[in-house]
Image 1 (cartoon, rainbow, N blue to C red):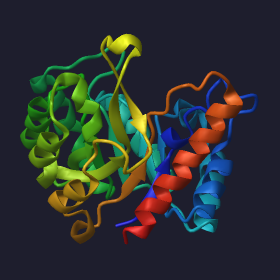
Image 2: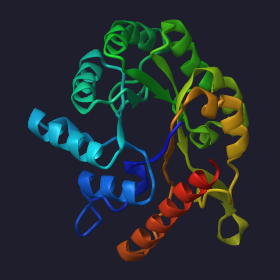
Image 3: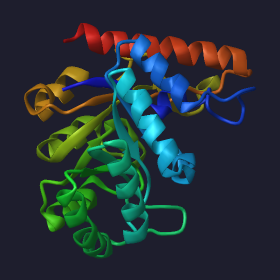
Length: 265
């Protein structure tokens, strides 16, 4: 098992709100500085525009830092996942995260299962595992129905239990249900806070260890150590009113999260 960061740990610093968004090379360098061993390029469409030379250079940069790369995208369309498999092979990636829905495609369980039965054999042949993330748009039961329906060791679950709260699924229940199928873990903590005047709640991220995520239960239940499942740091950091303060806090959260994981070894 290895610990690492995702592009989501740099969400605001690579966004269009940044005066100069961070590059992948800069994020890789910071990941190494912080002691991370894995970097997940997740929901970063720019990677789709990279030619072979640029992909090879990125792979070499990661290798120079001693970092393993992972990829992340959305959707289960055969052509789209085939394109990501090509990128994965060029980068030496063995784990690709995806999600069932995109903005213009929301497949049924049967449709998603059929599409993935076409796609997963090519991933398996290349030694690449595809992981479908838990999140509020798809029930955990439906997500698992797809994984079981395809029935391949190269298709599993990317566990992020906080995502499913908006579907009124308890994180602990999501962990328990998905545990045998988990191939990757997104680590981010979360909490509820009262809105002004006590009118409702805000559900948002917080420092790892200060919220509702039962990290020890998740790791023990999944058997992350024994099964060699990577843990990838992400955040739900609300905008702080200006870029400088948001970036400062994002950096603090990132350092705190990876340090917390490394101390738990």
